[in-house]
Image: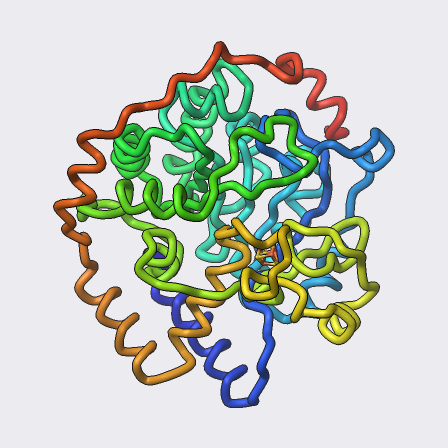
Length: 376
Ligand code: SF4
């Protein structure tokens, strides 16, 4: 659950857009200040750039300008690994000063040692990438010991009074029983709430066999998210969770989470790269939005169910009609656990897929080397 002040800020922002009659409005800015990373995950489509691109980064001023241009109440900072950006504390402080709710995504390899550079605030959450229990996470990020370091970072941040959330990306072969245990463990570790999403079929990702089709995704999420532990807290919209379970059908809203990076405003979404615009206005006016989403027939969108394309659709539905508003209010008030006997049977009969040995795509990066790259 997100804090009431954040929910109120987002709700009033969306209502204002509706009252202004804006058909397309952004909800969360995906701000990518760099693509450099200290991991090389098999399912990632962001780090396969040549060295000169991986060295490039946005300045704090470029970040603030992008935020002001699009005006979203929330900013997510993915990457790359944002903690490798030497001016990340300055960027985060500038966004917090602008009263933006910031989710700084991190694999947490450097979180413990860089924590002192940030100040706890209701506007700042560290969104730690943890893909599941220890073995599953280390396999997913192709780095032995990655889980233990991430958990150390989470515990240190929680103890220091920061808001900490997690984000979990699931690929084919994920074991729903293990994912459910992972959720229990994250709540026990003191995280505020969790986000879960299927991975996207990046054509640049090194392991193409990992991606899920839509029917398999729905089956897996139904097994994971039905019969849920009432202690689980998610920071995604409840109807997005129902969309993953196959209980809602949303079309993509690619403009809901626009992406700004060293290349400019990315068309049309966080995942695809069909060109760039120099300004947010140009992005909105020159993108052929009808060419995207499952309905468009675009094969690149056919299997996509990711959070960055579909959560804004759930939010828009929430505020688009009285029916949507009441439906959502009930979910927040009564927090359903989605009792489902068939899903329980599915869970009990699920055979975990075996995977081969863990292969480290990149050699483990030493702390001293990271310091050198990040310029500290
Ligand atoms: S369906 Fe997915 S890939 Fe296609 S525009 Fe939407 S978010 Fe992007």
